[in-house]
Length: 153
Image (cartoon, rainbow, N blue to C red; front, top):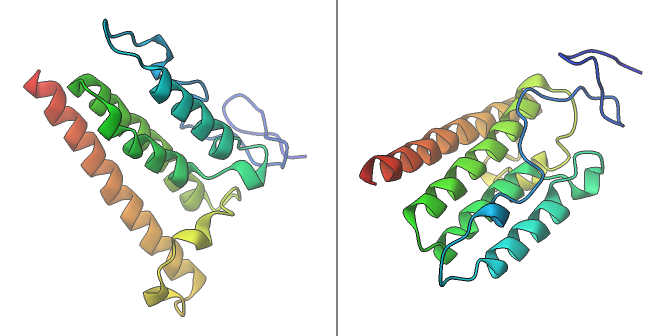
């Protein structure tokens, strides 16, 4: 099997671990707000990570869906800090997807789910470039929104 990367480690399917290290543990677990129950948010986050956050199992690996799940959490947030945290976590998962597409190293079984019918007939490499561009724009927007929320506090 391949051995490489910073720590000379590979995943079960032979792909090196990426430089982007998204947390596989819930982020809202330690956040406590007096008079407000975060249990529904915590359960949603744990379930999302269980469904789409296992890089070892191709059927349960979709970093874009996991990033979108964090955006779906924002209506449940009461504090700007919680919304900013959702945006940053979403950006991290989108960055992981971008890294996988850029390295062309596998782990992108989810790729075809995000190609719109307008470019179905395009060559595979053009589809990759289009999705990479979309992910970069999304990441920049998410980080920008999170920064604006942090500045307004």
